[in-house]
Image (tube, rainbow, N blue to C red):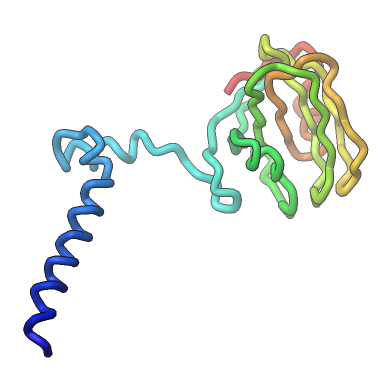
Length: 173
């Protein structure tokens, strides 16, 4: 072993360790390692194992009562572009929400989407505008909103009918 390289290697290792600690949540404003470790699990939102997107609860209020779903949030343009493409299955009480930066008329299609979906367009008042029920896999026909949508919810095809979801029902997430 060359003795001249040993101090340099230790210095480089120490510098990397300092850099890693400098980027940790503790350095970003926490006052104690114990405080940041105990707060992290409560603050961390669940992540979907397939998409890696954040999962949040979403409630649909129909005439039959509330129905709670666990939905992936497609927030960025890239996440919204991919949506549920290539997904081979989804649980009965799962879905994906596409929040819009500004309410606007919008249309979705089923390009590269393997499973049939109900596409639910939601207005700025969180009321359902319309439902494109049982959208056909791989179909590139645009399915438009009936007005300005502030969000779009995708559920398994037929699920909206199962819970009695219709225009005017409320969706919150």
